[in-house]
Image (tube, rainbow, N blue to C red; front, side, top):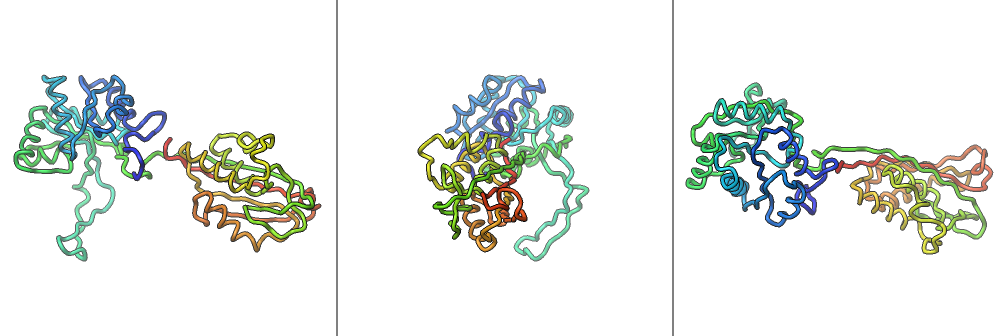
Length: 363
């Protein structure tokens, strides 16, 4: 995931991912005991996240070591269990139906794995020859998910055997298969995804609009999108009165549901007198990022009769896109006259409007 914390402690809604997963398992009512295995450094965070619903134990160096620790903890708290299900904490959207079908198949066969038919065509590369591929029969292929269920004695035996023989597997069912035991397929769910990359997280997009206008006066520099434009007049305001940047800031704040620039940078506060609006934009970007938003795109229009803005748009775009941390191609700046109508048309002032879309994976 590339983050600073383990992915299980990222929000997937109103709760953390691990909380969502544990709540889904607890809500089905099928389990006598829930055990969560987590990184040793995150024991406190995990206990706070799952509350009284589950026992939390530290994991090991490898996945199999962690599962072994979990099996040991189950043996201590519920030694008489007949069946054990193992589920990936990064599959928070597991449903009661998937859990129930896995349990039923486990009781019938002794071992079962939730799985879904593969929908893509799968190519197999010949060993040592990436130029040679074979197309596999998709009708016989299934993508394994979790939960995976086992008779308690069987999964413990599989782990003891793996430790003794130095075996490793990509999932628990494979260890059981290595013992020659049949594993049944339970009905999985395509929505039961494993969160692996940021694109797997649920996405919320929010749109925002912004508008600003300032009067043109003598004796002020004309600043637009952080660029000083040669002109006989400038825009009047408490800051540098960069009307285009102000409209963009209001659009960003509006999309994030965070008010407007007047709320965050009031013109009654002397520390903002004459300040560069680019600095204020940096603060706005930090505010929306703190809420989990990234900027998808911005479209802004400047309304001014004079001067001609087109020659400066490339440098404006480069300046603001860099501040907002987005590719220049996602920032569109336009300039238009108002055919000498209204305040911009009479050259009494300038106005700008902007629209944006923010993306939040941490919904």
